[in-house]
Length: 197
Image (cartoon, rainbow, N blue to C red; front, side, top):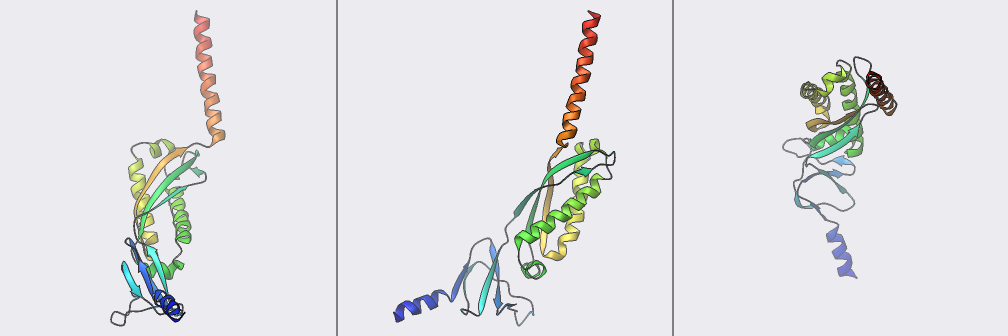
């Protein structure tokens, strides 16, 4: 029994950080700080030692992450509503800052990132016509969105690597009315040709 208890205690004294992850250590709820640099200590992949019940490791995935999102209706400058599907590539660059700004929650960060991107998309689409958004101007629009988002998320300890639009759709009601209008125009042409013989 003593050996089993000793084995359990020794297992609770170590923790592993996998490749592609980094970690922080909390001592009674506060970040462990490096005495030389006065900065929170970041732990690299490998096997690490902790004091059971006093130290709690927080491990974060520092690889490139993808956020797939879509917007509600966005109005362009010529008053056309569109739905936009997009994705964002991002990664954690400053783990301590990431933890301190949003308590290390990836879910909360992605919600905040989605809000910032939606605001930036609304701003950029509000300055352009729908034809500009779907033409060659799209790359310039994406560059401006990327720049504005990079600046707004820098204090969160993350880096936005890329933002891309996957698809731009008209709302269902608008699509149906456009299809009806196209059918009516084609029917008119067909009727005119029949009348001409």
